Length: 277
Image 1 (spheres, rainbow, N blue to C red):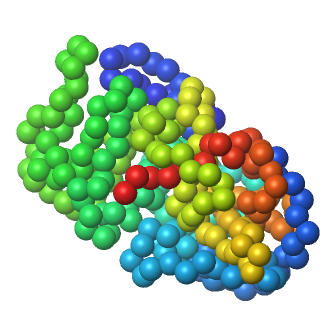
Image 2 (image 1 turned 180 degrees about the vertical axis):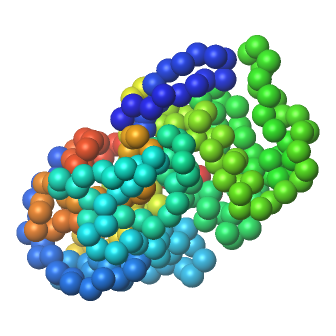
């Protein structure tokens, strides 16, 4: 995925944003559930893993969905066609700038969860040049300034913690961070330990990233999971189909694969990473 990124030093660069068929029977659901949890039933023989009420995992599982059949909207209001790409659209506004792309959507989901839980000190991301941008500084009315090779905070606004100001903070992060910087912040985890909230990410120019938004397991400890992404141009988050196993789709199995083929990107299992608490 390619994304036009204006780096802090005036350099313009591009920032982006094999599943084996498993003998698992998909449990078809014809309901029009309004969240990931109520829309998508696990395959037969699987049960969703338990999550605590105020966890990031529960937040992702309860993400709101647009009605069945909805098409993904780009930032400019146009629609993304759906040729075997996604099964549902997350009902969250993305702004009117071409910023909410792949890694941005992941950072946005994580930050919005923390903001709603009032865990402000945990909201921080690194720009591509390595500068850490803490939301607690933004709340104080501080803003980013760049002078030559130096990046620093200056007091230039009134203290605030409204959602509109939070969104301005996120759009700043979207503009100056991406897959390259986010991949450096995350910790690698083995596929056997996959959890809701984990991220498949290839950091680079271009790169891509997707989020695990739900997880279920069976009596044999086999795991299946749902994936969500944004892409470029900036667009709404979507729950992905599984192109390598249409009978299981949109669920993916964690068993017996070295490559994860998604509708618009190919990952390896070594690309699985996690936010550090």
